[in-house]
Image (cartoon, rainbow, N blue to C red; front, side):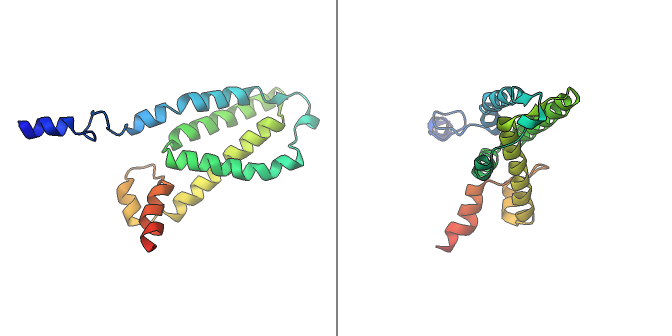
Length: 159
């Protein structure tokens, strides 16, 4: 009985003050972020196709933006929330296209960043698909390993 009480008081024990939050909590705290991004994206449409282009200096910035979202999606384990937001954005683009509205430069930048992120996540998963240790650590249908787990398993062990 005394050992069980000590386990409950241990800072890392489930429900204790130092307990790690669950995956559903981690995903839930990103909902406002993606909701605000989607709301912003919904205002990025213009009636003229001439205004629907990204300025040249913005093109190289899509890469770091896509890398940032890739890290956020993989390390934060929020792929489901990301893919839901991406498909909502795609549906909005298709819906607005029927109304003859086109993405402006800001919308093109955000959509391109998300498309690049989806490509990077797909490449990341394909590259690590047959890794037995990471497959065991991340079981289930949706397999998106964290970069930090890859680093600690494969890179830091070499030093």
